[in-house]
Length: 433
Length: 132
Ligand SMILES: [Zn+2]
Image (tube, rainbow over all chains, first blue to last red; front, side, top):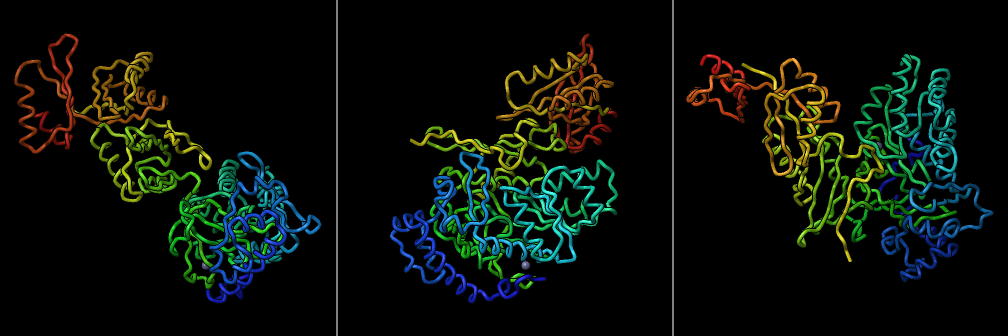
Protein backbone atom coordinates (compact mmCIF):
# COMPACT_ATOMS: atom_id res chain seq x y z
CA UNK A 1 0.00 0.00 0.00
CA UNK A 2 1.05 3.57 -0.63
CA UNK A 3 0.27 6.41 1.81
CA UNK A 4 0.59 9.33 -0.61
CA UNK A 5 0.64 7.91 -4.12
CA UNK A 6 0.42 11.33 -5.75
CA UNK A 7 3.82 12.24 -4.31
CA UNK A 8 5.45 8.85 -3.93
CA UNK A 9 4.68 7.84 -7.53
CA UNK A 10 5.01 11.25 -9.18
CA UNK A 11 6.95 11.34 -12.47
CA UNK A 12 10.55 12.44 -12.15
CA UNK A 13 9.89 15.59 -14.22
CA UNK A 14 6.95 16.68 -12.06
CA UNK A 15 8.95 15.95 -8.93
CA UNK A 16 11.82 18.15 -10.08
CA UNK A 17 9.42 21.00 -10.80
CA UNK A 18 7.87 20.61 -7.35
CA UNK A 19 11.30 20.47 -5.72
CA UNK A 20 12.37 23.62 -7.57
CA UNK A 21 9.33 25.57 -6.36
CA UNK A 22 9.85 24.45 -2.79
CA UNK A 23 13.58 25.13 -2.85
CA UNK A 24 12.97 28.69 -4.05
CA UNK A 25 10.64 29.34 -1.13
CA UNK A 26 12.73 27.77 1.59
CA UNK A 27 15.94 29.47 0.44
CA UNK A 28 14.22 32.85 0.47
CA UNK A 29 12.83 32.10 3.93
CA UNK A 30 16.23 31.05 5.27
CA UNK A 31 17.96 34.10 3.82
CA UNK A 32 15.41 36.54 5.17
CA UNK A 33 14.90 35.05 8.62
CA UNK A 34 18.07 33.30 9.67
CA UNK A 35 21.11 35.51 10.31
CA UNK A 36 23.24 32.41 9.95
CA UNK A 37 22.07 31.67 6.40
CA UNK A 38 22.12 35.32 5.36
CA UNK A 39 25.76 35.59 6.38
CA UNK A 40 26.66 32.26 4.80
CA UNK A 41 24.95 33.06 1.47
CA UNK A 42 26.46 36.55 1.34
CA UNK A 43 29.89 35.09 1.97
CA UNK A 44 29.42 32.84 -1.06
CA UNK A 45 27.93 35.62 -3.17
CA UNK A 46 24.64 33.84 -3.71
CA UNK A 47 21.22 35.51 -3.48
CA UNK A 48 17.78 33.91 -3.24
CA UNK A 49 17.02 35.19 -6.79
CA UNK A 50 19.80 32.95 -8.11
CA UNK A 51 17.70 29.95 -7.19
CA UNK A 52 14.99 29.30 -9.79
CA UNK A 53 14.97 25.53 -10.36
CA UNK A 54 16.20 22.54 -8.41
CA UNK A 55 19.32 22.43 -10.61
CA UNK A 56 20.39 25.74 -9.05
CA UNK A 57 20.89 24.00 -5.72
CA UNK A 58 24.58 23.45 -6.55
CA UNK A 59 25.12 27.22 -6.24
CA UNK A 60 24.35 27.06 -2.53
CA UNK A 61 26.96 26.61 0.19
CA UNK A 62 27.01 23.50 2.39
CA UNK A 63 26.18 23.30 6.08
CA UNK A 64 27.82 20.92 8.52
CA UNK A 65 27.38 19.54 11.99
CA UNK A 66 30.02 22.01 13.12
CA UNK A 67 27.70 24.86 12.04
CA UNK A 68 25.01 23.40 14.31
CA UNK A 69 27.46 23.25 17.20
CA UNK A 70 28.80 26.74 16.57
CA UNK A 71 25.27 28.13 16.56
CA UNK A 72 24.12 26.27 19.66
CA UNK A 73 21.46 26.54 20.82
CA UNK A 74 19.16 28.77 18.75
CA UNK A 75 21.17 30.80 16.27
CA UNK A 76 20.12 28.76 13.28
CA UNK A 77 16.39 29.12 13.87
CA UNK A 78 14.55 30.91 11.06
CA UNK A 79 11.37 31.69 13.03
CA UNK A 80 10.78 33.38 16.39
CA UNK A 81 10.62 30.99 19.35
CA UNK A 82 6.88 31.69 19.56
CA UNK A 83 6.46 29.69 16.34
CA UNK A 84 8.49 26.74 17.63
CA UNK A 85 6.40 23.98 19.24
CA UNK A 86 9.06 21.35 19.95
CA UNK A 87 12.78 20.98 20.49
CA UNK A 88 14.87 17.85 20.05
CA UNK A 89 18.54 17.45 20.76
CA UNK A 90 21.06 14.81 19.95
CA UNK A 91 23.72 13.96 22.46
CA UNK A 92 26.98 14.93 20.89
CA UNK A 93 29.72 12.35 21.32
CA UNK A 94 32.15 15.26 21.11
CA UNK A 95 31.42 18.65 22.61
CA UNK A 96 28.07 20.37 22.56
CA UNK A 97 24.86 18.64 21.58
CA UNK A 98 22.93 19.86 18.56
CA UNK A 99 19.45 21.29 18.93
CA UNK A 100 16.66 21.28 16.37
CA UNK A 101 13.47 23.38 16.61
CA UNK A 102 10.22 22.41 14.87
CA UNK A 103 7.16 24.44 13.94
CA UNK A 104 3.74 22.79 13.89
CA UNK A 105 4.07 22.38 10.13
CA UNK A 106 7.54 20.83 10.48
CA UNK A 107 6.13 18.21 12.83
CA UNK A 108 3.29 17.49 10.36
CA UNK A 109 5.78 16.97 7.54
CA UNK A 110 7.97 14.76 9.67
CA UNK A 111 4.94 12.68 10.65
CA UNK A 112 3.92 12.46 6.98
CA UNK A 113 7.32 10.91 6.22
CA UNK A 114 6.91 8.32 8.99
CA UNK A 115 3.36 7.51 7.80
CA UNK A 116 4.67 6.84 4.30
CA UNK A 117 7.30 4.47 5.72
CA UNK A 118 4.88 2.55 7.95
CA UNK A 119 2.41 2.16 5.08
CA UNK A 120 5.22 0.91 2.82
CA UNK A 121 5.97 -1.78 5.44
CA UNK A 122 2.38 -2.98 5.06
CA UNK A 123 1.08 -1.51 8.32
CA UNK A 124 -2.33 0.16 8.68
CA UNK A 125 -4.97 0.97 11.27
CA UNK A 126 -5.45 -2.70 12.15
CA UNK A 127 -1.92 -2.84 13.58
CA UNK A 128 -0.39 -2.21 16.98
CA UNK A 129 3.13 -0.82 16.92
CA UNK A 130 5.31 -1.19 19.99
CA UNK A 131 7.54 1.87 19.93
CA UNK A 132 10.72 0.81 21.71
CA UNK A 133 12.80 3.74 20.58
CA UNK A 134 13.65 6.07 23.42
CA UNK A 135 11.12 8.83 24.11
CA UNK A 136 12.66 12.16 24.98
CA UNK A 137 15.16 14.51 23.42
CA UNK A 138 16.07 11.72 20.99
CA UNK A 139 13.82 11.90 17.91
CA UNK A 140 13.20 8.14 17.64
CA UNK A 141 10.37 7.58 20.11
CA UNK A 142 8.17 10.62 19.54
CA UNK A 143 8.84 10.59 15.80
CA UNK A 144 7.77 7.00 15.27
CA UNK A 145 4.88 7.46 17.72
CA UNK A 146 3.33 10.31 15.73
CA UNK A 147 3.54 8.33 12.49
CA UNK A 148 1.84 5.31 14.06
CA UNK A 149 -1.08 7.45 15.22
CA UNK A 150 -1.23 9.18 11.83
CA UNK A 151 -1.94 5.91 10.00
CA UNK A 152 -4.55 5.06 12.64
CA UNK A 153 -2.66 2.17 14.18
CA UNK A 154 -2.29 1.72 17.93
CA UNK A 155 0.88 3.24 19.35
CA UNK A 156 2.27 1.32 22.33
CA UNK A 157 4.80 3.75 23.82
CA UNK A 158 7.00 1.34 25.75
CA UNK A 159 10.14 3.40 25.06
CA UNK A 160 13.47 1.61 25.32
CA UNK A 161 14.68 -0.64 28.11
CA UNK A 162 12.91 -2.86 30.64
CA UNK A 163 13.00 -5.79 28.26
CA UNK A 164 11.06 -8.12 30.55
CA UNK A 165 8.07 -5.80 30.56
CA UNK A 166 8.42 -5.18 26.83
CA UNK A 167 8.18 -8.92 26.14
CA UNK A 168 5.28 -9.35 28.55
CA UNK A 169 3.22 -6.58 26.91
CA UNK A 170 4.19 -7.82 23.47
CA UNK A 171 2.53 -11.13 24.32
CA UNK A 172 -0.41 -9.79 26.35
CA UNK A 173 -1.39 -7.06 23.89
CA UNK A 174 -0.40 -8.83 20.68
CA UNK A 175 1.80 -6.11 19.17
CA UNK A 176 2.03 -6.68 15.42
CA UNK A 177 5.06 -4.49 14.83
CA UNK A 178 8.06 -3.28 16.77
CA UNK A 179 10.03 -0.10 16.19
CA UNK A 180 13.51 -0.06 17.72
CA UNK A 181 17.19 -0.24 16.88
CA UNK A 182 18.16 -3.50 15.15
CA UNK A 183 20.67 -4.25 17.90
CA UNK A 184 17.98 -3.94 20.58
CA UNK A 185 15.78 -6.27 18.53
CA UNK A 186 18.62 -8.81 18.44
CA UNK A 187 18.96 -8.48 22.19
CA UNK A 188 15.23 -9.18 22.50
CA UNK A 189 15.58 -12.37 20.48
CA UNK A 190 18.23 -13.51 22.96
CA UNK A 191 15.91 -12.74 25.88
CA UNK A 192 13.04 -14.58 24.19
CA UNK A 193 15.24 -17.64 23.88
CA UNK A 194 16.55 -17.41 27.45
CA UNK A 195 13.07 -17.06 28.88
CA UNK A 196 11.75 -19.92 26.74
CA UNK A 197 8.97 -17.72 25.42
CA UNK A 198 6.72 -19.59 22.99
CA UNK A 199 6.95 -17.81 19.63
CA UNK A 200 3.27 -18.64 19.10
CA UNK A 201 2.51 -16.01 21.73
CA UNK A 202 4.28 -13.35 19.71
CA UNK A 203 2.26 -11.81 16.91
CA UNK A 204 4.89 -9.54 15.39
CA UNK A 205 4.95 -9.35 11.61
CA UNK A 206 7.00 -6.23 10.96
CA UNK A 207 10.17 -4.68 12.40
CA UNK A 208 10.80 -0.96 11.94
CA UNK A 209 14.55 -0.75 12.41
CA UNK A 210 16.81 2.28 12.26
CA UNK A 211 18.93 4.83 14.14
CA UNK A 212 22.08 2.81 13.46
CA UNK A 213 23.61 1.09 10.44
CA UNK A 214 22.79 -2.59 10.06
CA UNK A 215 23.68 -5.37 7.67
CA UNK A 216 21.75 -7.82 5.55
CA UNK A 217 22.96 -10.58 7.83
CA UNK A 218 21.29 -8.86 10.76
CA UNK A 219 18.13 -8.55 8.67
CA UNK A 220 18.17 -12.27 7.93
CA UNK A 221 18.72 -13.16 11.56
CA UNK A 222 15.95 -10.86 12.80
CA UNK A 223 13.49 -12.07 10.16
CA UNK A 224 14.16 -15.71 11.00
CA UNK A 225 14.20 -15.42 14.76
CA UNK A 226 11.22 -13.10 15.14
CA UNK A 227 9.29 -14.41 12.14
CA UNK A 228 8.88 -10.89 10.75
CA UNK A 229 9.79 -8.76 7.78
CA UNK A 230 12.51 -6.35 8.87
CA UNK A 231 12.55 -2.91 7.25
CA UNK A 232 14.95 -0.01 7.35
CA UNK A 233 13.76 3.40 8.49
CA UNK A 234 16.25 6.18 7.82
CA UNK A 235 16.55 9.58 9.39
CA UNK A 236 18.71 11.96 11.32
CA UNK A 237 17.92 14.58 13.92
CA UNK A 238 19.40 17.44 11.88
CA UNK A 239 16.97 16.74 9.03
CA UNK A 240 14.00 15.93 11.33
CA UNK A 241 14.27 12.39 12.71
CA UNK A 242 13.25 8.89 11.62
CA UNK A 243 11.15 8.81 8.47
CA UNK A 244 13.33 10.77 6.07
CA UNK A 245 12.97 7.55 4.13
CA UNK A 246 12.14 3.89 4.44
CA UNK A 247 12.17 0.62 2.56
CA UNK A 248 9.20 -0.84 0.71
CA UNK A 249 8.16 -4.49 0.42
CA UNK A 250 10.89 -5.00 -2.23
CA UNK A 251 13.61 -4.40 0.41
CA UNK A 252 15.79 -3.16 -2.39
CA UNK A 253 16.85 0.30 -1.29
CA UNK A 254 15.45 2.92 1.06
CA UNK A 255 12.96 5.28 -0.61
CA UNK A 256 13.65 8.88 0.34
CA UNK A 257 10.75 11.34 0.62
CA UNK A 258 12.36 13.84 -1.68
CA UNK A 259 9.53 16.37 -1.81
CA UNK A 260 10.45 17.07 1.83
CA UNK A 261 14.12 16.15 2.01
CA UNK A 262 16.08 16.70 -1.20
CA UNK A 263 19.06 14.32 -1.47
CA UNK A 264 22.29 14.84 -3.39
CA UNK A 265 25.43 12.73 -3.58
CA UNK A 266 28.71 14.62 -3.71
CA UNK A 267 32.35 13.63 -3.81
CA UNK A 268 33.48 14.09 -0.18
CA UNK A 269 36.79 15.60 -1.32
CA UNK A 270 35.84 17.90 -4.20
CA UNK A 271 32.25 18.42 -2.97
CA UNK A 272 31.15 18.21 -6.61
CA UNK A 273 28.03 16.18 -7.44
CA UNK A 274 28.86 12.65 -8.65
CA UNK A 275 27.27 10.96 -11.66
CA UNK A 276 23.86 9.41 -10.90
CA UNK A 277 24.24 6.02 -9.24
CA UNK A 278 27.77 6.66 -8.06
CA UNK A 279 28.81 6.45 -4.45
CA UNK A 280 29.60 9.52 -2.41
CA UNK A 281 28.49 11.57 0.56
CA UNK A 282 24.78 12.10 1.11
CA UNK A 283 23.68 15.74 1.37
CA UNK A 284 20.17 16.85 2.33
CA UNK A 285 18.23 20.04 1.84
CA UNK A 286 14.98 20.25 3.78
CA UNK A 287 12.46 21.62 1.29
CA UNK A 288 9.58 22.13 3.70
CA UNK A 289 11.08 22.69 7.12
CA UNK A 290 10.58 26.23 8.42
CA UNK A 291 11.73 26.33 12.03
CA UNK A 292 15.27 25.37 11.21
CA UNK A 293 15.82 24.79 7.50
CA UNK A 294 18.91 22.77 6.62
CA UNK A 295 20.45 23.77 3.30
CA UNK A 296 22.84 21.28 1.70
CA UNK A 297 23.57 19.59 5.00
CA UNK A 298 26.50 17.16 4.79
CA UNK A 299 25.39 13.96 6.51
CA UNK A 300 28.86 12.30 6.19
CA UNK A 301 27.00 9.09 5.33
CA UNK A 302 28.36 7.36 2.24
CA UNK A 303 25.81 5.84 -0.10
CA UNK A 304 24.47 6.01 -3.66
CA UNK A 305 21.08 6.91 -5.15
CA UNK A 306 19.04 4.94 -7.66
CA UNK A 307 16.48 6.95 -9.66
CA UNK A 308 14.89 4.00 -11.45
CA UNK A 309 11.25 3.32 -10.75
CA UNK A 310 10.86 0.65 -8.06
CA UNK A 311 8.92 -2.58 -8.56
CA UNK A 312 6.57 -1.39 -5.78
CA UNK A 313 5.34 1.39 -8.09
CA UNK A 314 7.07 4.26 -6.30
CA UNK A 315 9.24 6.65 -8.25
CA UNK A 316 10.75 8.06 -5.06
CA UNK A 317 14.53 7.76 -5.29
CA UNK A 318 16.14 4.83 -3.49
CA UNK A 319 19.24 5.04 -1.35
CA UNK A 320 21.49 2.00 -0.99
CA UNK A 321 22.68 0.81 2.42
CA UNK A 322 24.92 3.30 4.18
CA UNK A 323 28.42 2.17 3.26
CA UNK A 324 30.27 4.10 5.93
CA UNK A 325 31.19 7.61 6.95
CA UNK A 326 33.15 10.13 4.97
CA UNK A 327 34.75 11.63 8.04
CA UNK A 328 36.96 8.60 8.60
CA UNK A 329 38.33 8.79 5.05
CA UNK A 330 42.09 8.69 4.64
CA UNK A 331 44.13 9.61 1.62
CA UNK A 332 46.87 7.00 1.25
CA UNK A 333 49.37 7.28 -1.62
CA UNK A 334 46.93 9.71 -3.19
CA UNK A 335 44.00 7.28 -3.07
CA UNK A 336 40.85 7.82 -1.00
CA UNK A 337 40.44 4.93 1.42
CA UNK A 338 37.38 4.36 3.58
CA UNK A 339 37.56 1.84 6.43
CA UNK A 340 34.06 0.76 5.40
CA UNK A 341 35.45 -0.46 2.07
CA UNK A 342 37.91 -2.67 3.90
CA UNK A 343 35.09 -3.96 6.06
CA UNK A 344 32.88 -4.92 3.15
CA UNK A 345 35.74 -6.70 1.39
CA UNK A 346 36.58 -8.58 4.57
CA UNK A 347 32.98 -9.79 4.77
CA UNK A 348 33.44 -11.49 1.38
CA UNK A 349 36.00 -13.86 2.94
CA UNK A 350 34.62 -16.62 5.18
CA UNK A 351 38.15 -17.25 6.46
CA UNK A 352 38.49 -13.89 8.18
CA UNK A 353 36.84 -12.43 11.26
CA UNK A 354 34.94 -9.21 10.43
CA UNK A 355 37.30 -7.14 12.60
CA UNK A 356 40.24 -5.11 11.37
CA UNK A 357 42.53 -2.26 12.28
CA UNK A 358 44.23 0.02 9.79
CA UNK A 359 47.58 1.62 10.51
CA UNK A 360 48.94 4.31 8.22
CA UNK A 361 52.37 5.86 8.44
CA UNK A 362 54.93 7.50 6.21
CA UNK A 363 58.35 5.89 5.89
CA UNK A 364 60.98 7.32 3.50
CA UNK A 365 58.33 9.54 1.92
CA UNK A 366 56.09 6.60 1.10
CA UNK A 367 52.79 5.91 2.82
CA UNK A 368 52.53 2.55 4.51
CA UNK A 369 49.12 0.91 4.67
CA UNK A 370 48.90 -1.98 7.11
CA UNK A 371 45.67 -3.82 7.84
CA UNK A 372 45.55 -6.09 10.86
CA UNK A 373 43.11 -8.96 10.51
CA UNK A 374 42.26 -12.13 12.38
CA UNK A 375 41.67 -15.53 10.85
CA UNK A 376 38.67 -17.51 12.13
CA UNK A 377 39.74 -20.38 14.44
CA UNK A 378 38.66 -23.12 12.03
CA UNK A 379 40.90 -21.71 9.30
CA UNK A 380 44.15 -21.79 11.23
CA UNK A 381 46.41 -24.42 9.81
CA UNK A 382 49.78 -26.04 10.37
CA UNK A 383 50.90 -24.98 6.89
CA UNK A 384 52.45 -21.59 6.56
CA UNK A 385 51.91 -21.45 2.80
CA UNK A 386 48.16 -21.63 3.17
CA UNK A 387 48.14 -18.60 5.43
CA UNK A 388 50.45 -16.75 3.06
CA UNK A 389 48.13 -17.53 0.15
CA UNK A 390 45.09 -16.46 2.17
CA UNK A 391 46.82 -13.21 3.01
CA UNK A 392 47.74 -12.64 -0.63
CA UNK A 393 44.14 -13.19 -1.78
CA UNK A 394 42.90 -10.49 0.57
CA UNK A 395 45.64 -8.07 -0.45
CA UNK A 396 44.86 -8.59 -4.15
CA UNK A 397 41.16 -8.11 -3.60
CA UNK A 398 41.74 -4.85 -1.73
CA UNK A 399 44.15 -3.70 -4.40
CA UNK A 400 41.56 -4.31 -7.11
CA UNK A 401 38.73 -2.54 -5.24
CA UNK A 402 40.53 0.36 -3.56
CA UNK A 403 43.45 0.75 -5.92
CA UNK A 404 46.40 0.35 -3.59
CA UNK A 405 48.11 -2.69 -2.17
CA UNK A 406 47.93 -3.07 1.60
CA UNK A 407 50.23 -5.05 3.87
CA UNK A 408 48.01 -7.60 5.50
CA UNK A 409 49.12 -8.55 8.98
CA UNK A 410 47.46 -11.60 10.48
CA UNK A 411 47.32 -11.19 14.24
CA UNK A 412 46.46 -13.58 17.04
CA UNK A 413 42.82 -14.16 17.97
CA UNK A 414 41.04 -11.51 20.05
CA UNK A 415 43.70 -8.86 19.60
CA UNK A 416 41.52 -6.49 17.57
CA UNK A 417 38.95 -4.43 19.45
CA UNK A 418 35.53 -6.02 19.15
CA UNK A 419 32.93 -3.32 19.65
CA UNK A 420 31.11 -2.27 16.52
CA UNK A 421 29.92 1.13 15.36
CA UNK A 422 32.01 3.81 16.98
CA UNK A 423 35.08 1.60 17.52
CA UNK A 424 38.29 3.20 16.35
CA UNK A 425 39.24 1.23 13.28
CA UNK A 426 42.19 3.20 11.98
CA UNK A 427 45.14 5.21 13.14
CA UNK A 428 47.12 7.63 11.03
CA UNK A 429 50.66 8.25 12.30
CA UNK A 430 51.60 10.61 9.48
CA UNK A 431 52.41 14.16 10.36
CA UNK A 432 51.20 16.82 7.97
CA UNK A 433 52.82 20.11 8.86
CA UNK B 1 51.64 -44.25 11.75
CA UNK B 2 49.51 -41.16 11.98
CA UNK B 3 49.74 -39.08 15.11
CA UNK B 4 48.19 -35.81 16.17
CA UNK B 5 50.21 -32.61 16.23
CA UNK B 6 49.37 -29.23 17.73
CA UNK B 7 49.88 -26.14 15.59
CA UNK B 8 49.90 -22.71 17.12
CA UNK B 9 49.81 -19.48 15.16
CA UNK B 10 52.33 -16.93 16.46
CA UNK B 11 52.71 -13.32 15.62
CA UNK B 12 56.43 -12.77 15.42
CA UNK B 13 56.76 -11.33 18.84
CA UNK B 14 59.73 -12.10 20.96
CA UNK B 15 59.11 -14.44 23.79
CA UNK B 16 55.89 -15.82 22.33
CA UNK B 17 57.20 -19.33 22.02
CA UNK B 18 58.71 -19.22 25.47
CA UNK B 19 55.29 -18.20 26.75
CA UNK B 20 53.72 -21.30 25.26
CA UNK B 21 56.48 -23.55 26.57
CA UNK B 22 56.01 -22.13 30.05
CA UNK B 23 52.24 -22.49 29.89
CA UNK B 24 52.49 -26.15 28.91
CA UNK B 25 55.28 -26.83 31.39
CA UNK B 26 53.38 -25.26 34.27
CA UNK B 27 50.55 -27.64 33.49
CA UNK B 28 52.77 -30.70 33.43
CA UNK B 29 52.64 -31.18 29.71
CA UNK B 30 55.94 -32.16 28.12
CA UNK B 31 56.82 -31.16 24.63
CA UNK B 32 58.34 -34.20 22.97
CA UNK B 33 59.17 -32.23 19.86
CA UNK B 34 58.58 -28.86 18.36
CA UNK B 35 59.53 -26.77 15.38
CA UNK B 36 58.72 -23.20 14.45
CA UNK B 37 58.46 -22.12 10.86
CA UNK B 38 58.28 -18.48 10.03
CA UNK B 39 57.22 -16.12 7.32
CA UNK B 40 58.04 -12.41 7.31
CA UNK B 41 55.73 -11.46 10.13
CA UNK B 42 54.22 -14.56 11.64
CA UNK B 43 55.12 -18.12 12.41
CA UNK B 44 53.56 -21.46 13.18
CA UNK B 45 54.78 -23.58 16.05
CA UNK B 46 54.22 -27.31 15.61
CA UNK B 47 54.30 -29.30 18.79
CA UNK B 48 54.14 -32.96 19.70
CA UNK B 49 53.13 -33.82 23.25
CA UNK B 50 52.34 -37.12 24.94
CA UNK B 51 49.36 -38.63 23.21
CA UNK B 52 47.12 -38.68 26.27
CA UNK B 53 47.75 -35.00 26.94
CA UNK B 54 47.12 -33.52 23.53
CA UNK B 55 43.49 -32.60 24.19
CA UNK B 56 44.38 -31.03 27.53
CA UNK B 57 47.12 -29.04 25.80
CA UNK B 58 44.73 -27.99 23.06
CA UNK B 59 42.08 -26.75 25.51
CA UNK B 60 44.67 -25.04 27.63
CA UNK B 61 46.10 -23.09 24.69
CA UNK B 62 42.64 -22.32 23.38
CA UNK B 63 41.52 -20.95 26.74
CA UNK B 64 44.54 -18.64 26.64
CA UNK B 65 43.35 -17.27 23.29
CA UNK B 66 45.96 -18.97 21.14
CA UNK B 67 45.05 -19.88 17.58
CA UNK B 68 45.64 -23.57 18.00
CA UNK B 69 44.62 -26.44 15.77
CA UNK B 70 45.18 -30.18 15.68
CA UNK B 71 46.31 -31.97 12.53
CA UNK B 72 47.27 -35.52 11.71
CA UNK B 73 50.84 -36.02 10.59
CA UNK B 74 52.93 -39.05 9.74
CA UNK B 75 55.23 -40.30 12.39
CA UNK B 76 58.10 -42.57 11.58
CA UNK B 77 60.10 -44.25 14.28
CA UNK B 78 63.24 -45.67 12.80
CA UNK B 79 66.54 -46.98 14.11
CA UNK B 80 69.05 -44.20 14.21
CA UNK B 81 71.21 -45.47 11.41
CA UNK B 82 72.16 -44.12 8.02
CA UNK B 83 69.94 -44.69 5.04
CA UNK B 84 66.54 -45.12 6.69
CA UNK B 85 65.38 -41.63 5.93
CA UNK B 86 66.63 -41.79 2.33
CA UNK B 87 64.62 -44.93 1.66
CA UNK B 88 61.48 -43.41 3.13
CA UNK B 89 61.85 -40.31 0.98
CA UNK B 90 62.42 -42.36 -2.16
CA UNK B 91 59.32 -44.46 -1.61
CA UNK B 92 57.13 -41.45 -1.00
CA UNK B 93 58.47 -39.67 -4.03
CA UNK B 94 57.87 -42.74 -6.25
CA UNK B 95 54.22 -42.75 -5.17
CA UNK B 96 53.88 -39.08 -6.07
CA UNK B 97 53.59 -37.92 -2.46
CA UNK B 98 55.19 -34.55 -1.91
CA UNK B 99 56.37 -33.30 1.45
CA UNK B 100 55.01 -30.11 2.92
CA UNK B 101 57.37 -30.11 5.86
CA UNK B 102 59.22 -32.50 8.10
CA UNK B 103 61.29 -32.46 11.22
CA UNK B 104 63.22 -34.97 13.24
CA UNK B 105 63.86 -35.46 16.89
CA UNK B 106 65.89 -37.91 18.90
CA UNK B 107 65.04 -40.08 21.84
CA UNK B 108 66.48 -39.54 25.27
CA UNK B 109 68.76 -42.51 24.80
CA UNK B 110 69.39 -41.63 21.15
CA UNK B 111 68.89 -45.14 19.80
CA UNK B 112 65.96 -44.14 17.70
CA UNK B 113 65.26 -41.18 15.53
CA UNK B 114 61.73 -39.94 15.15
CA UNK B 115 60.47 -38.26 12.03
CA UNK B 116 57.36 -36.14 11.65
CA UNK B 117 56.35 -35.87 8.02
CA UNK B 118 53.47 -33.78 6.70
CA UNK B 119 52.64 -34.51 3.06
CA UNK B 120 50.04 -33.60 0.50
CA UNK B 121 48.47 -37.06 1.05
CA UNK B 122 49.00 -38.25 4.59
CA UNK B 123 46.80 -41.36 4.28
CA UNK B 124 48.79 -42.66 1.33
CA UNK B 125 52.07 -41.70 2.97
CA UNK B 126 51.01 -43.64 6.06
CA UNK B 127 50.41 -46.78 4.01
CA UNK B 128 53.77 -46.50 2.26
CA UNK B 129 55.73 -45.79 5.41
CA UNK B 130 54.19 -48.66 7.33
CA UNK B 131 55.29 -51.08 4.61
CA UNK B 132 58.93 -50.03 4.82
ZN1 LIG C 1 9.82 0.40 -3.65
